[in-house]
Length: 494
Image (cartoon, rainbow, N blue to C red; front, side):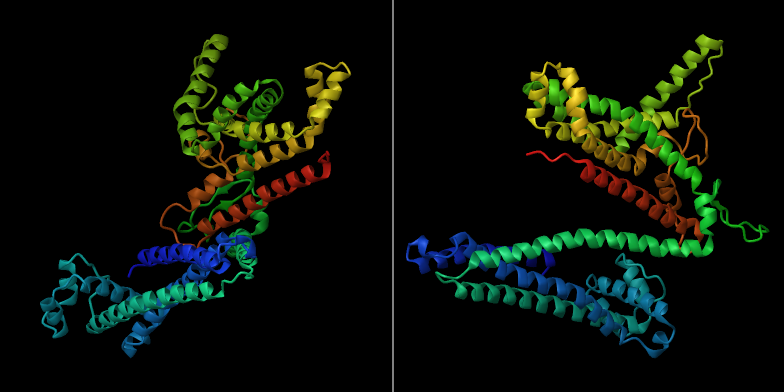
């Protein structure tokens, strides 16, 4: 029985168990629901949880342990000559055995018999069925593959029987516990609390795992390249060592990438902040409810557009437009119609990224401005201030800490952008202040260094993890500082 079908049956058992629990609670109350400690829905949920949760846990544990046991049993049948050649050889042989096992299902009884008595070649027979082996098929592989299929099939059927038995037993046990004074609600809420804790823990543990994996690989990189050279180097040229180079493996200066990251993010924020903030002020203070209900969702549609689409927009529209307009301006001023803005430039990437960030700025700022109490507005207007004076001198100062925090969170989003920069700013790693020339960012070089068939044994690939942990620290610091600003200067209103 397949895992998906087994899960479907478990869900069906849980569905039936829910209604069985409800019916049991109705029967116990003799039609008087007031005599029940918990509502019938809680009794049904209690029975459904006992029917589904233990069976699901058993299924998950079996799916983890069964492949380990099957692999161990199959490796035990390998000849001593194979097992004595080391773990890599055993794993390669195990992979070939699994390929043979997959091909045995396609063979006829006559073909299988021919393989067993040695009158047919294993590799050629499987190749005729579309199964390719990495090497020549050895005689022991056929028996190992048959054992693999036998144990796997037995394990699958035994798993199905055990899981279904656990589901049924759990449901029956829960149904028997139902009584008028049974605290089903407390039991269900305890399970839900545990589920919430597990969900929260998964998020935290995932972050710790990501940071730990990057730190371990970054440590390997810094064992090959000096941290001083990486953090303070001004040249990015991670080439492989060439013959006669004396072991030189390129230069891994972070500063050009960091400069490009911050420069492009600065231009994007310079474009997004005024437009987004003014849009938020208009929607929160000036727009009618009807216009606000229409304009805000339309503005937030920009946040749902994939970044690769923004990259195409920059490459096809914004970049050529800036290049052509610069050529026209240069021609009018000097008579030389040569463009001074490149199609791929910091300005192009900054403008398009700024367009992408507008809904982040406007939506967050709008939510913060609307949280300012109405009494402050009415008091300012009552003292004779105009609406614009109220916005400038009352509302914005009250909402400023939250707006600053929103802008810092938006900046961390800009720092981590990749696809727009690849298509709009190029891949040139250099330090310069001209916004009309190409630059690149940390995220682009992470993708570039991990593209290809390279193994994670050279500094050219391990540098991606050093770049990743650097970017992780930058964005983490921005987020922490944003939360600090919000909490320190947040106004407390009744």
